[in-house]
Length: 302
Image (cartoon, rainbow, N blue to C red; front, side):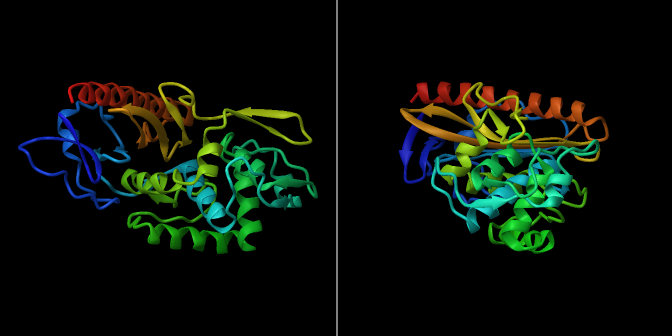
């Protein structure tokens, strides 16, 4: 049975109160989780939480692994902390530099086209970074924000420490570097913080984006977006990192819309990026659909 408590809804088991929530790595699993049967991935690592309910658990050894373009969640989070935007607002104006333009087309990394000297809105650049996962855009935003990419990386690590992401190290802003490493618990912690920003939520829910002046339109790399309540968040894949997916979805529980946030890392590492990405999407989809069904089932018994 679900009952209301100060922390949201929880399952009554033995009449006791809900588990204490630390809100970060090592967070106690909510009592509700004991009544759920989740299809955790058989490899890599995964963590899931429901806002207002708490952690639904973590699977896999929480050792830092490469996270590829999931890195850009922190890049966007820091940019929005330094340059806040209202939901739907264009934000500040950013002039694309020659380096970002020169890096627009690459055969070795994911990029998005920009023109040197052209003005872009902060929102459009964040979309070009998060939707098609433009590495050159991540580096452009870092230079705009902090002067140098190195200075911005230092901000990323300070921010991670402030959020309690104890197993995370950022060495770049795009995720190209395999030395940027984290865990599913840490990435879940970041995702929960980032999703509190309405502008961030809008950006990661964007289905497609057009690069001004080029006519090029890109679809979101998150293939789950718009299905089964999914409203974000970020993909990342490479041969060393495998497939990675941080996702956010919604589900109505006992009359209240709850945000479900999850992180699936290191799926099919050592294979091709395409194979890893497919595995991460499959693992994420299995968790999302089951959690939404199980929450509805448990709420229906309340």
